[in-house]
Length: 336
Image: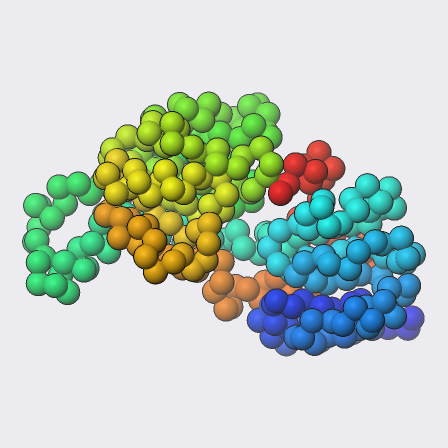
């Protein structure tokens, strides 16, 4: 391609081979003059030399300062997992100039949703506890072993948040015939009903759901949304699946309630990762713990590069991006 646009590829902490299939990386180089394109962080002086000519920046996190001296910039394409914070990126300038700020979050939806479903079934059927009992020679066969177990079929399920992750999880629950109720103050009730889910208050969701999924993205409004008072609304026979961000939960209160066997839980995200070896969450009964594994399956991570190159190709040809998540002014200023 003659006069190819310049694209800065600085994905650190991601590795290029981690997020790009060879064929997609080849497509990227055919579309653009790739600047840097290494796994090491791009030095500031190298970035500064490339600023004026950059059509797009592919990065895991925005740390390059002002865009005022980037006259050709058309897209910021983040490959870390979420849009840059408004604390580090000048969104008003981006919106005023028509610069697309794109997140690779859609690439994570299917694999994280699958993990959420797996954790749910493992918790509801007490698969992990039964396995540990068997290894320790304490297994209980047949009916008595299922005294506190349940199946997903026909259960009422609650989604806290109805973004991309929830929309990937919803069809996975369809074979179970679950009634899905949603708390999401960022979406109109009419829209939610048209998606086949029932909008409810957070308190109602917590009190009436057998399985509760924490799926919302972190914002200034939802820090510790599930405080002790709200966590105490969860029925004793319910399962809380914490799969998006621990930001939404008072984790100390959650840990205490789990030690008191108030309900069961499956947790993939923590306030500190890894948690200290003496953190009491490690010994909480009735809990399945996962080391932030839901969104890091090698084959599926390469979908990040695939959708990034697809959208870059569209923009180079004067078309809008269709696959990455575009920052919206009504939402992005509420992010943490």
